[in-house]
Image 1 (cartoon, protein in one colour):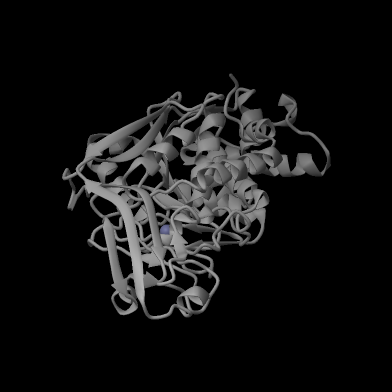
Image 2 (cartoon, helix red, strand yellow):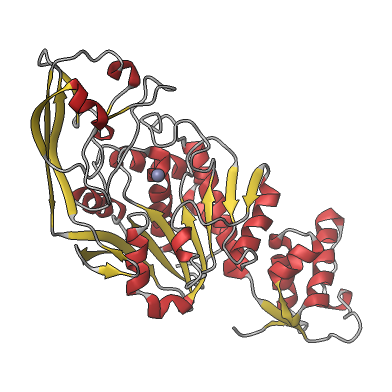
Length: 437
Ligand code: ZN
C-alpha cells in the first residue's frame, strides 16, 4: 500500500490503459435493459462491483422517502411491434431504446390511429431512436427512427409488451473505501439509463475504475461511491443516511464524461466549497474548460444540494445534458464516447481529488521576520528552484494556521503541486508543521 499521491496514482493507472478499460466496461454494460428499477439495474451493479466491496441496497416498492414513494419494480422479457403485413418494425432485442422505459404490459391489435400516440421519433434526426421513459405516469410506447415512422401505412398493428410492474424494490449500489479519516468524499453516478453511453455509462465506468484503484492505495478521506437511479435513488439514499451526512466534506456527481467536448464543472449550491475551488484550480491549469454556477436542474446534485441538505457536491461533465444533439438518443453510442475523453475526465477527477487529499493548514514556527532558508539548505538554483522558492515564501507567509495550501495556491497563482512541494520541503526543517484537523 502506498499513500495517495496524484502522480503516483496516475502512473499506476497508466491513464492510457484506463481509457480503454473504461470504454470496454461501457461496451459490456451497453446492451443491458435498465430503468429506474428492475433486474437490469441489479445486473449493472453486479458488473460495476467487480473488484469492489459493493453492497446492493434494496428499498421496497411503496417505501416513503422524503417527499417521494418508491415506484413498483419493472421488468421486461420481450417487446415488439408488427406492421399490418406481419413484419416486425421494432423489437427490444434490436435496441432497448425501442421500448418506452417502464411500459406496462400490452398485448393488442390496433389501428395506426390508435397506435400513433404511443409512437415517438425525432423528425430532426430521422435515423436516430429517441429515449423515453415513463416511471411515474402509467403509459406504454415505442420509439422509432422517424424515417421508419413516417412510412407506416394504415392497417392493423400487433403490439406485444411482455413486462411486469409489481411490488419489488428499487436497487442502488454503495461502496465504502475507508480512509485515514472518517471524513467522507461522496462520488455519485446515476445507474438507470438504458443503452446510452455518455449519459451515463461513462460516469459509471469512470467511478468504478476510480474505486478499484482507490481501493489499492491509502488515502486520507473515506470514499463513498454511490450508483443509484437518478432522483428517486439519490432521494432514498439521502433519506436512509441523513444522520451520517455531516461526514461529507466533498462530493461530486459524475456524468457525461465520455464525449469529445471540453470539460464542464458545475459548482455546488454553496458556490465556493473546497471541491468547487479545487476543480477551478486544476482545470485552469489543464486547458479549455468551462465552470458554471449551480442551478437546480441537471442530475442528482439537485438532491444533494437541495436546501435542507446543502451538501458541498459539484458535478463534472464534458458537454452538459441537452447541449449535444445525440443526448437521449441512439446516437449516444459506443462511438460517441472515446477512451481519450474518458481518460481526460479521469485525470481531471484525480487532479482535483489530489488537491483535496493534500490540502491542509500549516503553521510557520519562525513567523517573526523571514526565516533564513539558505542555512537550512532550502535555496536551490535554476528556474524550478525559483518557482519553488517563491512557493516557499508564500507558504511561510500565509501558514498562520488559518490558510490552507489551496488558499495559498489561489492567492499566489502558483500550481497547487508546487505549493505542496514547498510545504513538504519546509516540513523537513524546523520551520513548518501541519495543523491538526
Ligand atoms: Zn439522462
